[in-house]
Image (cartoon, rainbow over all chains, first blue to last red; front, side):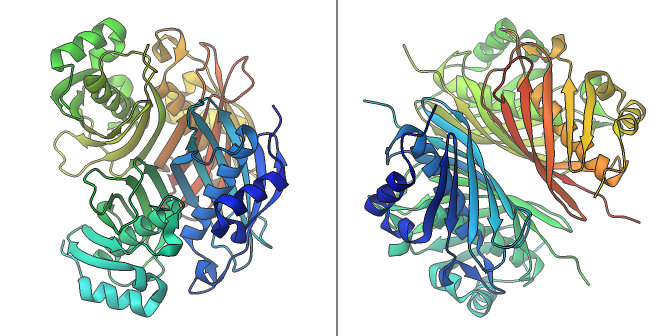
Length: 139
Length: 139
Length: 139
Length: 139
């Protein structure tokens, strides 16, 4: 199955529906069942010591998996997070972050998968999240 | 075991170390192995439709469990989130939120527990999180 | 909302559908949105040192939440585990274990809640699980 | 960093320490920070309809991550599961199962990673688990 929305479609959707998100997140690549999204870490995302905060990493993982799902099913804004479990493994640097999301199962009512988070300039991942989204019924 | 920091100690700690957090979160009650924290939902925390965003709920759960742990072990700022798994169950309203955190196990190196999140004016919980914090070694 | 199946109904259901489970698990109490289930730890459930194994604790948590859900919605055998996240906090003893399950949200398609596990003769909980079950559509 | 135990070492360790596990699980490949383990599904692992049970899949994921960790750190039997979160995505068939475990972070006191579970003869994964193990202090 191929994506039904591409980078341009997803970014236009974010600007229209979630302008706050559109200013922080950029779609880099859309693949079947997968996406790459980057986040510009702003002042509000940093903790003392210059590390990106947990809530900012949560926001990036959540946004990336949402967009990966919409890319496959189309612009259903009511698709919502059911659960998100994140393991924090390394302290990110103060720079931009990159999320690699993949969908492991796309069913009629649930999209299940995971997201690996990377900090610019560090090779090993800094966090890993398992995510489930609920897809609204058709009709 | 009794808490070693009370409401005033925790709020002073937040103001000194995390001024951004101190402006959003208030400690309401400190108990042995438990705490009540509230969050004033600001513009940046709301999604279209007037509901509090997932990252804002994550931030509240994370902050509440952090403070519950510090209340028992003292002001060790380097105590960090190891993992946080959150189930979103109901859409919160646009108002303030309340977190009830409890520590289920306080070991030498890990603090493990959960947090129930409530939306002002709704009785059933809107989200539930399992949280693990890593405690820095003494010395 | 009151349970639609009581202790006797649930145990008869287990004997008919899952005889292996019926031999290990006993329903102690059925409440609205909650249940108490005990497990007799057999030889196969023990690890060296006489502690109950992780998979046996998983089985107890899973079974307890399944029965808590069926008690509320009736005997729909096709209700299946979607996700289960368990934190192991203390080493249980070699004896029987008790699960206290509670449903935090019972929707049309998902049942979400948690389970606390206790080891006979120990007061603090030994493990805590967050569980989501998928409920088959009606009709 | 290279593994310090190979297939033969791990299987000998299981036979000596966990003979019940050694009869069900086989190590297929050991890689740096990763392992492939298979499980022979026996009568006790099957549910009505001929599908492998949740607890059996939990046991496989748990065992695979344990062995992946020991392969890197050596035979420390007291390494124990701290948390395991499993998403069940598809119904497995009645045959053997395969686990692909990878370590995402190997710290001094925690080993964190995930495990993908496959059912013989099915291409997409049937379950995905995030796992954290606690490593005993040296000395």
